[in-house]
Image (tube, rainbow, N blue to C red; front, side, top):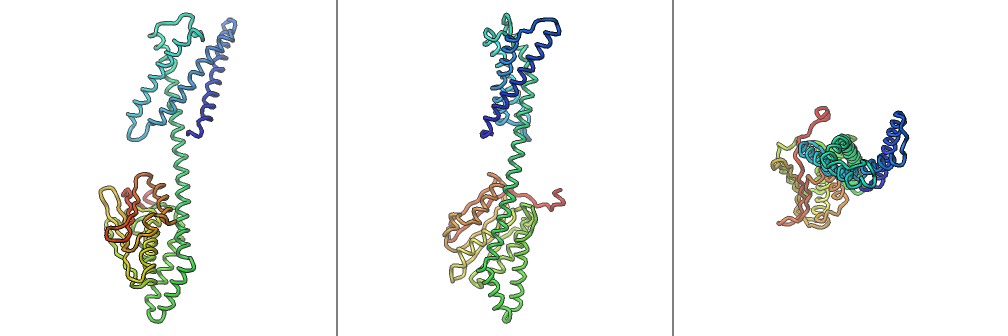
Length: 358
């Protein structure tokens, strides 16, 4: 709104100037119809001055409504604030007439203050509320534009998350290791090789999913994550241990798509793949009142993960900010017993299929 303030001032000034000329035309027409001479200088001065007094008042009402709009949960409080503003406008218009009448000449003889206030109520009450209504229309239109812009940004970030996940899974090093492991296991462990192929196919299919939903059920996110971990466990062997601590009552919780995989991928890369000794990655989900707590931790070194400098982590932060605003937490830090912990707090919501949501 601030970026468009000069344009808004010009539009408001133009609107009230046009209104002033319309009023002048009406008064002159009435005088001519009554056989009276048209007093153009006085008529222009009086009605243009009256119209231009509305310019700062209109801008002030727009700003006031922007701070105290009528919205769900605070209708009566907002109406009280708007009513107070209208009362102030009526008083200011009466005071302006009293202060400027000697120069403008609205009255040949200034009436008492009580009569000025009564006239101001009759002349300005409806106009003030109309301006309040227009201001609300502008506020709601701005919010709709902002929501549309955020939705477009979220779609772009979701597409970026899919592409990031897909490129990480399709990069030559990853595919070489996965396919090489499958080739080595074909003869000595055909069942293991088959499982790895199934996991690889399911993971790629999930990455190419063209669903436009920003959020999915936690159970679906965990299924995709399990396919990824299945491939990494076969590739890394005994070096990778995974501990699951998932409250089964939360499997229908709603979470962003591709939320956990970049976190687990980051933990495996920094805490397990770079060492020869076994490492553990833990995935935990629990609920505390109306908050969903998700945590991915490892027992390895801190490194890049603690600072949240990875592309996947930056993208995850941006998506969470777009989806939840300030109604979430994203904490990365070192564990007391060594390793790194990524902890998320999201609003708890039950996932609904598209049909049910519709």
